[in-house]
Length: 225
Image (cartoon, rainbow, N blue to C red; front, side, top):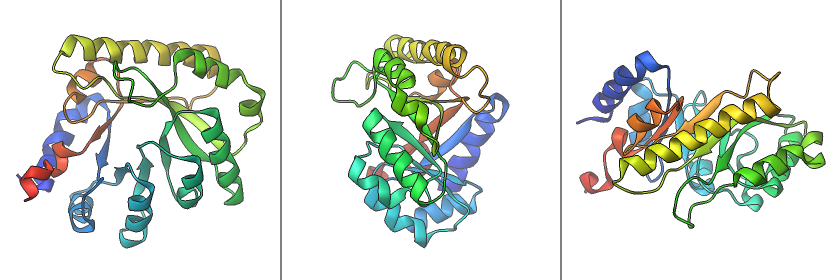
């Protein structure tokens, strides 16, 4: 099926549940991204800074670019002028760097804290304890050029739906707790990004309001041979 057909099917499916769709365009060509853009998609997510920096000037400037992959502190400066949302903040050190670079460009950059919910140790993310510590820290309190607008999590790569469902449930519960404890007066803390092409339907049932789909839109790389 075409990219346009895939997009329209997914958008029709999630229309009633008010979920924001991020098209994961890593490894995809400018032409493929433009095809999704022409079908009405405006939010795209990239995993690699270099790819994002190369694609940004080659595509329409009303695209909202999300950084969804692991972000090294020394790469923040390259995306700080234009990135719309950084979904993968996994340390106070990184948050400081984003704040510093956002200030240089006279911007406030929206961020999600990435929470480690998967069984795999290889996945990045903060523990619940680290999040509480970060939000209570004096360094965070002084930041004026970032805004934490929600949480992001990646579930275990498994066929076991029960495991995935429990991980998403845990993240939604933590999100609700943080909202009450730290963001009660902040109406911008409202994004819960969880769910990819293989598990987005399950994520939505557990309260996700932002999903990150790559192969579900663009097809698997095997189909592009």
